[in-house]
Amino acid sequence: MNLQSLANMLGMSKTTVSRALNGYPEVSERTRERVLNAAREAGYQANPLARSLAIGRTNVFGIIYPLQPADLGDPMFLDVVAGMSSALEADGKNLIIAPVSPQNELPSYQQMVRGRRVDGLVVGRTLVHDERIAFLSKAKFPFVAHGRTQLNAPYAWFDYDNEAGIRMAVERLLSLGHQRVALVSAPLELNFARQRRDSFMVALASAGLNVDPRYLIENCIDRRSGHQAMQQLLACSSRPTAVIVDNHLAGVGVVRALADVGVEIGKEISVIVWGKMADALTSSDVTTIDQPDANQAGARMIEMLLQLCEGTPAGQLHELWQPTLIPGSTTGPAR
Image (cartoon, rainbow, N blue to C red; front, side):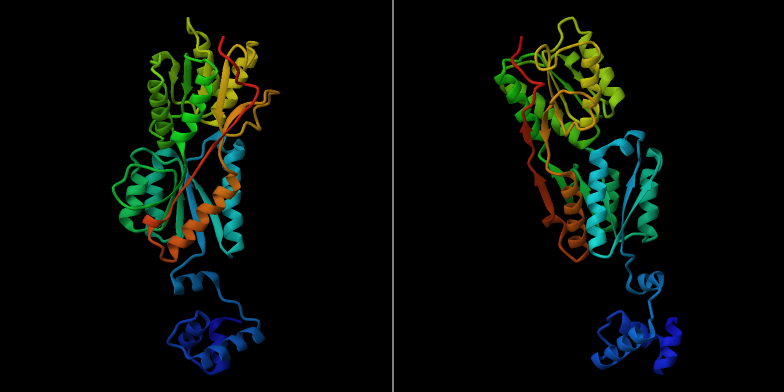
């Protein structure tokens, strides 16, 4: 049975029946009850596309993502997405991931917003200066940023305390007597990488230590680049006694590079990695800067996005979760 058939059966106009089904206030309670009862008895189910057009919502939320090959093998990314999907399913809504090429990312946002294909978006891998967030803010389109950015406008964001996490790692290494400390970073246009690098520099400067430029390696966001970065550090004439890696995928490469040449991690060189190392394929119990459960983080971002769609001001939706340092066997006294 379609909407017109239901209207004919009730002797009402199609418009009145549609408004009754969708809860419009101008329809009397008596009429609404009559329509709803008839719809139940007749087994009527609304066309979801037509209903979305009528109420101006799709009940679909999205992520536009320039997927890298490593992302599909990244348990943390998959856990975040799983948390988002579960939270939406519990609310009768759906999640879509739109993979795009990096050069087509902003045009994809523009298409998605102008076509109202989703009710809201989660923006991942935020940049220091992020034109995606600037566009969404100007368009007044609901979104939650997974990470912060430099923008002089209120926007909803979820993030981890990047400064605090790196500071804890540096302080741990300093307490063990390390003075030659290296940092392997993701690309510094990513806001989390920039914040973590800045925190690293401040923490060492506060301890009266200068950083050897050779010990600062960036653009490492996967296993291969992490492996190459560690090889580069090992080739230094005076190599570092400790290494901090600001993301877990590069951390896998760093740990493997040390294992490949037989370096005793935690004795010859100490290593601290941001993020769980479940896929490191090594027996090392890696010291990590641990962030709260990724699945819960994904769910929380969806909760914030739904609040935003219900009218909560973006400036009131800021969530900063604190990381913790989990000691492991990969840190030890400096030699």
